[in-house]
Amino acid sequence: MALQTELIPPTALTAPLRPVTARGQVSRRAPGAGRGGRGAAKLLVSGALATGIVALALPKVAGAEWVDIATALKGLTVGQLALLTVLWLAGLWAQTPALTAALPGLSHRRALMLNLTGSFVSNLLPLGGAAGTVANWRMARSWGFESPAFARWAVLTNLVDTLLKFVLPGLALCWLGVAGVEVSSSVSTAAYVGLGLLTGSLAAVWLVARDDRAVRWLGRVADRIVARVHFLPKADEGYAERAASFRRESAGLVAAGWGRMVGAKLAYAALQAVLLWACLRVVGADVHPAVVGAAFAVERILTMVAITPGATGIVELGMTGVLVAFHGEPATAAAGVLLYRAFIFGLEIPVGGLSMLAWSLRRRGTALAA
Image (cartoon, rainbow, N blue to C red; front, side, top):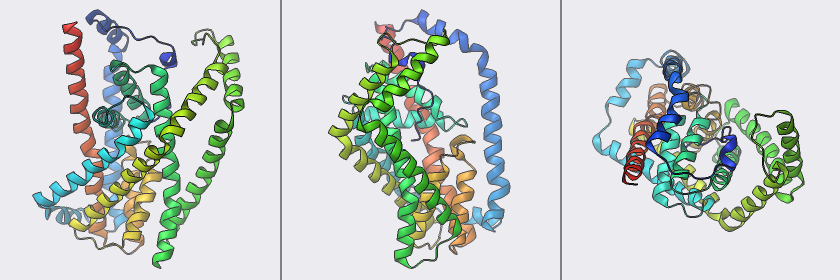
């Protein structure tokens, strides 16, 4: 899942939990009622853009015709698809300890539900991570978690995930060197970009983690802005004090659960890389594991360029370009990438949608029973 913290509602840190009534649900829907048409149009346009990029550009990048790519995919068996599905599910489950460590009291089942439903929402829209985070916030609130606890969860899980994305290109570059594989410019560029972003991120984390000074300064800036912009929500104790408290409580979570957070994220990434390798193998692509690691590392970086839903189009072109640059057979390389993306992007939409539907029906049943 690709959670983002760009949009945690400003009132999320102060709003008390309130029982949900049918009347309250209607009143909340009313302000957004006119946005349905615009939302649907945005979804159609972004989906068409992503589909167009794949349809028109992928054969050119791969150097293969669509008929050859389709032929490689036609040979899949039910057993192979079942094995790939097991790998996909294993990766999702392996990540749940990182999610439960960042939100004490969250079960593994609910952590998996948050992962899937967040991906369902974010995969439908360009820059959809914010919408996915809001959906997760509403679910967590319905389970009794306070908004500050959810905010810490969102920040910490995204931070670990992002830092890992920055590390992977460098690891892939080292693996290629050890394996004696000549490195392509795309992988080198991704490694240097990742190193630069990792250095900047670690510096920012160090400034925040060492003491309260950095967050108090940011909080004082927020207090001054709120004092001038009257429609913004105010913090009773001031944002400087709230930010310091948030930092200390987050540091406590990291101290208690950093091993589970990092270990589970690493296991998740490893299983996703194995899934990519398996997708390439079942369509007949014979690719060195180090090259698979390089394609996976590039994919992790490109998923952050989410100008289309899930960075669709951009990711497929980048991964296929890496595999072909390392002398992968064009048609099977493209077919393997499409199959991999069908699992980690495409399949998360219907499965996540069903998870959200189940949560909505259970929540509605609870409200009616009350």
